[in-house]
Length: 179
Image 1 (cartoon, rainbow, N blue to C red):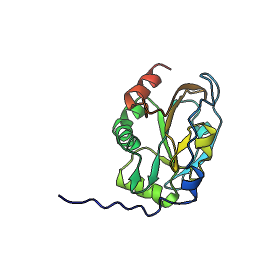
Image 2: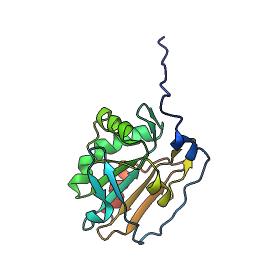
Image 3: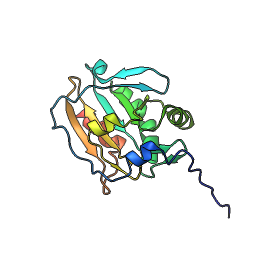
Image 4: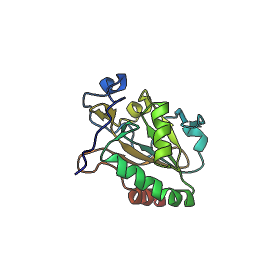
């Protein structure tokens, strides 16, 4: 039997302590409300401003990654499933923006190692995670998913719970098809 060694380097950081105490996810927006704009860069240093995507639906997938080597056990399979379903979203004319709280270096490693097709936006200060009410626990913000229509209005939201960690790609595709 081979023992697995875990690499915890990079886990205990300022971000870890800032997100250590549990804060439950809470709905910040009502269905039909225009969500706040934001501007984040992706791992290739391209700027993405949410309002630039007006005119087509957007899925915001806030994900929980501790470091480039440590993933949330609930989010890792969700990230892979979203990547696998990515072309289905594209086929429906939907922009998918995945948002992580890892730093630039860690985010680049994640993008490369998981061969993500969708943009991976970096929010290392967790500003948008807090603004969107995703909550936090044990060193990282919690995951959440939002579907925004072509006018910038919230049409679907899924906040983390222990019963339902992430909205599946199928559920998000359903939400998009029912805009």
